[in-house]
Length: 349
Image 1 (cartoon, rainbow, N blue to C red):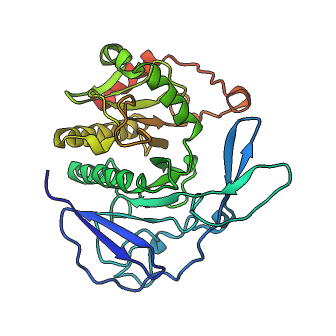
Image 2 (cartoon, rainbow, N blue to C red):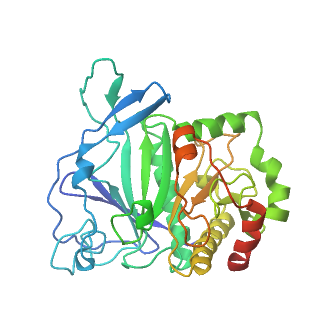
Image 3 (cartoon, helix red, strand yellow):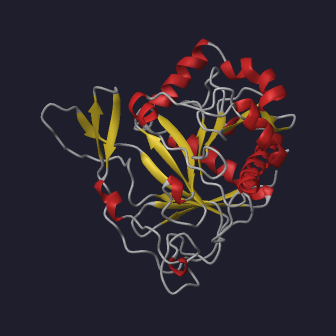
C-alpha cells in the first residue's frame, strides 16, 4: 500500500482538522468559519430500558439542507464563503462536529429523581471526498482504502482517551435516514460507555464466535459477494429485508488489524455493496451503515464486521418501525433472507 500522510491542522477554535491523503498536504489555509460555542450535552438514565439517553440542544441549530453552492463540506479556499475545510483540495477530512451529541464537558444538569451526568466523548465528521456528489459507489478503490485507514487511525487515537469506552464510525445515507447535508460523509461517535447493542454483541462473542459458526452457511447460501478475505452476506436472522453484513473471513478485532490485502478486499466489497444497492434500486439507495469493532484494540473474542440497514421492505417501499419493533423491540419480517440474498447477489457479484 502507498504511504499515507496525515496532517493535523489547528483551527481558529484550537480544535483540529485532520487531513488524510496519499500526497502530503501543505496548502496554506484560507478564511475559516466563525468560532461556535462548544456544546455541553448531558445524559439521563432510563431505568425502564436500562440505557442512557443523551441531550444536546445545539443540534436544533445544526446546518440543514443548505443550497448546493453553500455546502459546508466542500473545499472552501476558492469559494465566496468559508467552509469546514479551508483549502482548495483534500482527499479525506475529519473534524469535530460543531453540534456534537457527545463532547467532554462539565455540565452540572441535575434533575430530581433522575440519574444524570455529562455526555463525555467525541463526535467527528468524516468527509469522504472533496467532490460534492462522489459517494462510495463513485470513488476509486484506493480512496476507500484511504477511508479505512483514516477510520483505523481514529479508533487508535480515540480509544487512548480515558473518557471514551467505545468508538463507532457510521454513515447515514439519504434523507430517509436523517441526512441533512448531501455531500457524502459519515460520522464517528466516541461514547463514554459501551452502547447496549454492542454490549450484547460482546456477551455473544464471549460465549462463542457465532459469526465463525455461521461462515460456511453464509458462504454457501447467504452471500452476495465474497473473495479470499471477506464475505458480504444477508444474515439469516436479518431484521431488514435487504440487510447486509460485510465480514472478514479472518477473525480480527477491528480494521486496525487489517493486512494490506484485507484493506483492499474490504474496499472492493464495500463499493460492490453500495453499487449493488444502487443498481438494485435504480437510484441512490438509502441506508444506515456502521462498523462494529471491539471496544479495545487487542480483543481476541470479538469478530469485526460492518452492518447495512436499508429502510426498505420490498423494492422502494419503506420499512416502518411500527408497534412491535418500536414498542417491544421485536422485528416482524415478510421476506426470507435466503431469498433476498439470491436477489441481491445478481447486482453485487
